Length: 129
Image 1 (cartoon, rainbow, N blue to C red):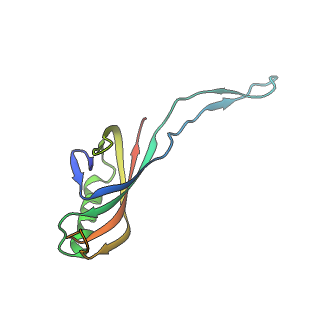
Image 2 (cartoon, rainbow, N blue to C red):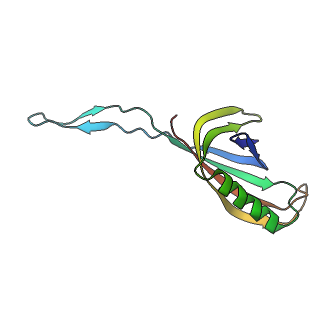
Image 3 (cartoon, rainbow, N blue to C red):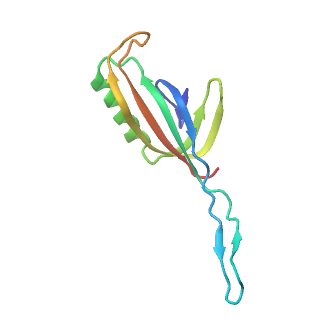
């Protein structure tokens, strides 16, 4: 389960990608000195790309798309905690919701899924890691 600011995102994750934190050393040189020097400026933020099978008793493809739009408008540029729970559970603090992007679908109910569903990617930035 994935939750942002205490609100569950319907469905389940299929891939949780953590992009390496930005490291921005400060490089400088001085007159009369050969070469350059570097000061470690510390780690900055990092990105999470979370691929999910998105479903939640949606009666139609339009209802599913409306739910995606609602999540985007509710959390766009909001900051808070990202919580991942399940086999691997972890809380990530100081996160900013960037977007929820539809990558495939929506698809009608089939097999074990009794709801319209789609594949989405949540893009979230942890402001400091």
